[in-house]
Amino acid sequence: MNTDTPPSNKILWMDDEPHKFIYEVYSIEKQKNSMGENYQVIMVSSVEEAIKQLNQEKFAAIIFDQQISQSTKKLDSNQISYTGAFTTHYTRNKNNIYNLKISEFSLFIEDFSSEIKAKTSRNLEHNSKVPIAIVTAISNPDTKKSILSTKKIGDNTTKLSWIEKPIDEIALIKFIESL
Image (tube, rainbow, N blue to C red; front, side):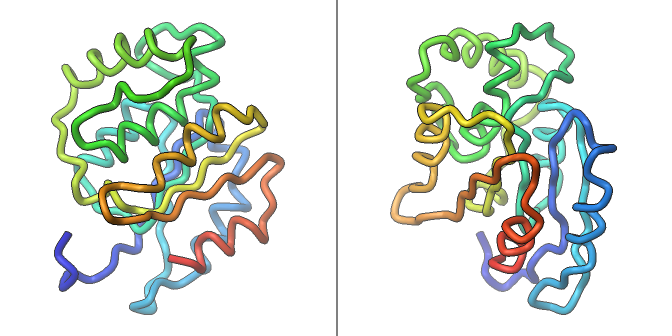
């Protein structure tokens, strides 16, 4: 990543129920980046939309809901439960997205990633080290451990936060202020 480029003021938020976060989006958009610009939240409701945005734009931060039921692919309840983890791993791991150790998720990764790869180009380098917050109502220790394991990329450690629902506005704003 070129350090001479100005920081982005855009934050990607993937949630299949975006209407539930109007207040949180408003709170984020009142915050300013290091250049004094207000943040702009780009809300998407599916993994496919998120990956498309990640390929096209550079973001200051990314917020993924852990459970996303919106997809062009029919997902079962186990797959829906791990879409935030899948998207985090997809964003973080440039060459290998098959490294999650969650057994019921392995076939989903293989099948779903093939479909995503067929639809989108893989140009995520500019977002591979961007801070990510996972927002979730699920408190599964294995999933949390797997997601938090993506903090380390080569020699770089990136910011990865876990925010449980209902969303703690203070935790959300601290995540934004840390950018």
